[in-house]
Amino acid sequence: MLIKKIFVAGAGTMGNGIAQVAATSGFQVDLMDVIPEQLERARGTIARSVEKLVGKGAISQAQRDAALNIPTYTDLQAVSQADLVIEAASENPELKFKLFKEIDQRARPGAILASNTSSISITKIAAATQRPDQVIGMHFMNPVPLMRLVEVIRGLATSDETTSATVEVCRIMGKEPVEAKDSPGFISNRILCPMINEAIFALQEGIGTPEAIDTVMKLGMNHPMGPLTLADLVGLDVVLSVMEVMQRDTGDDKYRPAYLLRKMVDAGYLGRKSGRGFYKYE
Image 1 (cartoon, rainbow, N blue to C red):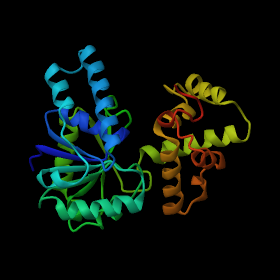
Image 2 (image 1 turned 30 degrees about the vertical axis):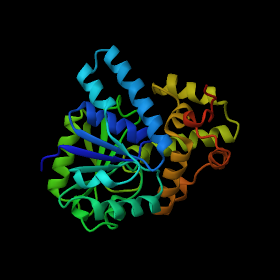
Image 3 (image 1 turned 180 degrees about the horizontal axis):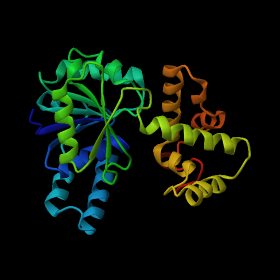
Image 4 (image 1 turned 180 degrees about the vertical axis):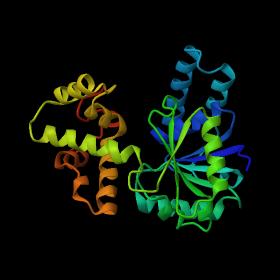
């Protein structure tokens, strides 16, 4: 199964990063978002990113130019030309089910449909399509241009051919694909988000300040950044969504989101992308 053209649905933080990496890796890429302003922000983010990478000698001028010339759309018109569709929409199950049903109807026969979901069942997403054997999870890490890991998640019906082709795409992108079972949160968020949630509980209970909690984890456990700083980077709304999915799908209250996390999301304090989370950002 030869993958030449990739369609990325969703131009937010993850989507524009995936599109950038795909373009600089030699794939033909289309990027879509229903919000025109989001596409404009994506173009600016990609431009800043590739300029930094060129300056560091990490990519060539030709690779930069490829990323700067990604065609953008506000609908799915170009999805019919893709060999691989990567969905990077908001972490909302109903939104993803609806989007996959529509993509399935428009994508060519044989095209692989992948989701960048960080917690939602690939089997459930695949059930919204007529090609469950060609649906797979590709969970990239943030920031996509810098992080090497991609979790590859097979749904119940995902074929060996689909998996092999997806793994190959990851490797061409310079990523390290790691297969994970289709279980709530997969591997990464099954471990990461409960740790972040527990750090929020510690803050909620006044055990330490955000700075103290993060410093303990950095200096005591040798983490590159503290859990509250990481939550701000990931997005508090994303952390909350993952915790809700894991609590609902496992039925285990150990995944109950901290009240402070819900309160901050309700207030619009989502982290770096909103300018305020556990810390303030310019």
